[in-house]
Image (tube, rainbow, N blue to C red):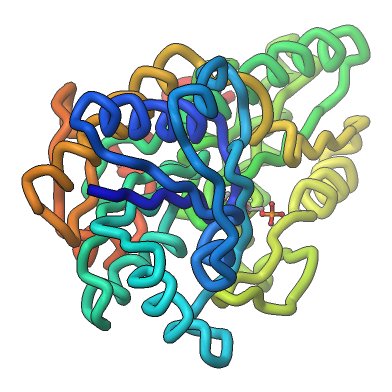
Length: 342
Ligand code: F6P
């Protein structure tokens, strides 16, 4: 049996533990593993890396991905789909493990219907916005990184009696903002799921001042939106998966807060720091469990499925179902955050 593996979309901590687990489990089963470099690009161009035990030794604590990644969409490139099919056959692949988020797994799901059926998906993303799984790996590390940043912002905000706005990633879901905001004790948390009401934000901050709290931490998700304003973007141009580049809302929000409250305000855009670094124990273990399960699915010929976490069990769902809709923040969690607002 020969298994291919690729990692696509934005990188995140935990990708290397998945690659390692796939190779180690495949070795136990007597299967061979070949890596494709830079996501779907590697399968289109047949750019490969042999993955034996030596190749994955020592990669468990490393962030990023030893395979590299890209946001290449074979459905958006002339002749690319044919190349994918040809290379699948040419390399003698029996199965492919696609590790990615909604875009990479969206392609995996389409390929499953379009004549490349032997694919198994593994859900990754710091955004935690994939359906059918309680958590994607990468999210926990990002949340811990953001929490640490919020802790640091707290001490300087308090000393200077300032408002600090921390802009975080997450695309169109507020998971990072909400969980890191809760963990870091943010005073205001703004997420894409709930339109921003500036009067309410300023009222919370002013109320804090009245009770002697002359500083506030506001966490805003990059995809959050004002009630009466278009989404703030860095770049309107769409990528191959139809996404604009988000970012910049913190700057606008901070300006408005300072103007309306008169309190000195600073903005901190956390950016790609959130995607870097060594995976937490949770992400190492989750990635490892996902990788092992992916090979088990292949062994049992359960293709067109995505491995997933349900409670504390590793399960699997049809790829199609996993990419149908984004998993956004539920009201229950938001209501908990509201208790600590202000
Ligand atoms: O999907 C992961 C993510 O980090 C999003 O949170 C963010 O909007 C996007 O990727 C940034 O992408 P890039 O690395 O291409 O700037």
